[in-house]
Image 1: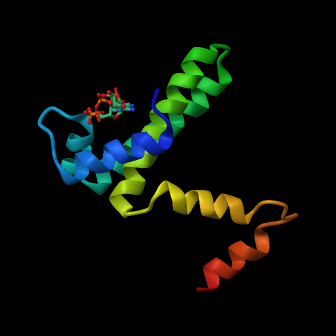
Image 2: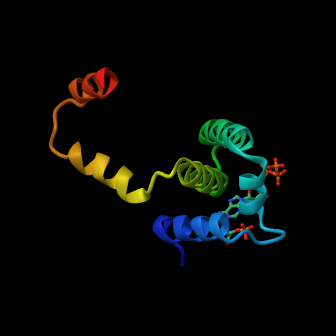
Image 3: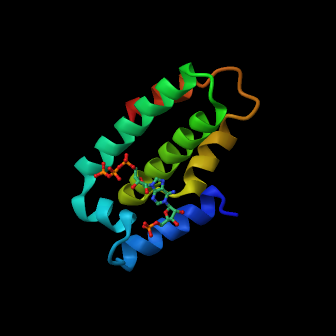
Length: 106
Ligand SMILES: N=c1c2ncn([C@@H]3O[C@H](COP(=O)(O)OP(=O)(O)OP(=O)(O)O)[C@@H](O)[C@H]3O)c2ncn1[C@@H]1O[C@H](COP(=O)(O)O)[C@@H](O)[C@H]1O
């Protein structure tokens, strides 16, 4: 059983200690453009799968996207805790539009 935090830790481990034959290592070696391309591709595959009736296919594509987004986060040095903090800060708020405007003004 692997949750998103554990997967992120494994991705970080691959980033810090490259392992031959590892797909994660392959992505980090190729660099940001390749990672961004994969995130875009996987996002499109989620959209297409969402339109089809197969739940297993949709789940598979969401898992692929989650993995590639975590690789992107690791590449940018952003942790799951930072995402959780952002989500927690939204709890109980009627609108997050004002906060977004403030972030853009920074
Ligand atoms: N969750 C994933 C995961 N999801 C998707 N993928 C890989 O993402 C690729 C997506 O398939 P595509 O057909 O789109 O891409 P491709 O043709 O293989 O390769 P590209 O040249 O297009 O990038 C596949 O090769 C999958 O194996 C993943 N690879 C690794 N993980 C996790 O990362 C861990 C570490 O993996 P390694 O780094 O390979 O040891 C694994 O134990 C898994 O838990």
